[in-house]
Image 1: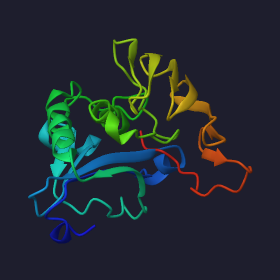
Image 2: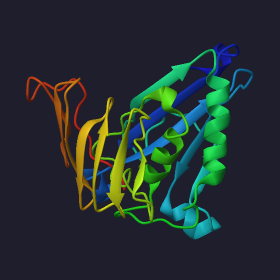
Image 3: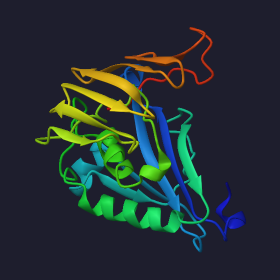
Image 4: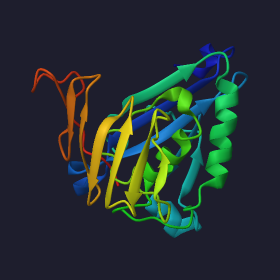
Length: 216
């Protein structure tokens, strides 16, 4: 929504779009956009490798249009929250941006990467109940930690350096992470989660949300 028409409402949005070039066959790039109640523009938080090489930090804080295409690829809105209480959610997201411990590191596989960063931000905002795509390679990377809350805040996960682990959550369902690839089932949405294909909903082949490849 045009921020000029939302001067009385705060907004948080989470997006995913196919990654650049060959990586788009395998993964998506994700980012978080916020607008405080009195703000007249969005602030977009994301991570990318070329920024690290140029500036010494992979974290990008920009005011671009949050739903603009990512190198020509149309984004998908993953989660959104507006209105009362969202300014406090934005404050927690801002703190999470500052506490991200891999700002000086970027690895396409198995992480940390853009999806690792967004998963970190989402753990500070469980109100969004965001279910990141199965193709968001790197979302399960926990570094030396073995246990963490699921990004949606509705469950928990165990993982070994992003290459082997499992996740169980009300929003995500059950997921198995093998070499950075996600295999899962979401009972609430009657869908499967598969590498490359992403989410395949019931009836099989009639997926309202087209499968996406993820960015690492």
